[in-house]
Length: 218
Image (cartoon, rainbow, N blue to C red; front, top):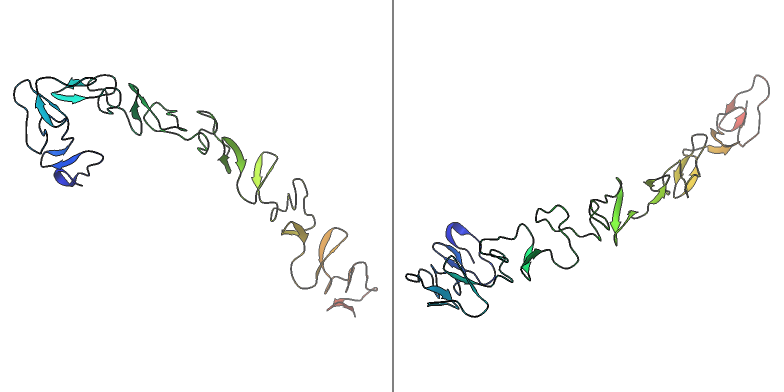
């Protein structure tokens, strides 16, 4: 429902020409839009009366419950900031959240990477907050303090510290050579199609003056 100038009204508020109003307690819109209480009367449960009911306080000619009213929390005019709500006379975040910055922003310590497990405890770059603890994301491992995908990281191929050598690449956690004729010989990738010291296979050396062509010494 929208109030003045298209303002969106929520909860028990009604859309009145003057704006969103709680018809049960608004002294300018008591019981219906535009019905204002006269003189020193206050709006109590949609009726203009001489005083507020039990447990309610007169705040600007409107009866309000200071225990739970977010615009009058604990005292008239005390507005709860941001995402906090009024619970038992104090502005609080919903269960499971906390206002780390005291600015009304409610943080979830279980999943907030800037406040993981405790306010101000930030996760390093690349890590996520899971159940209040910093951890690497999906398909990643923590190697030397850095999250990496060991399926494709040549410095940590298949596990932390397992480095590929000799121009090998890491594919699905295995150090491999890429390209037709490429093979690991003595820990390095060579092309057995044209390498005269590994012609056709590792260790097959062509004779003096010969070249390797398509894996054959000529």
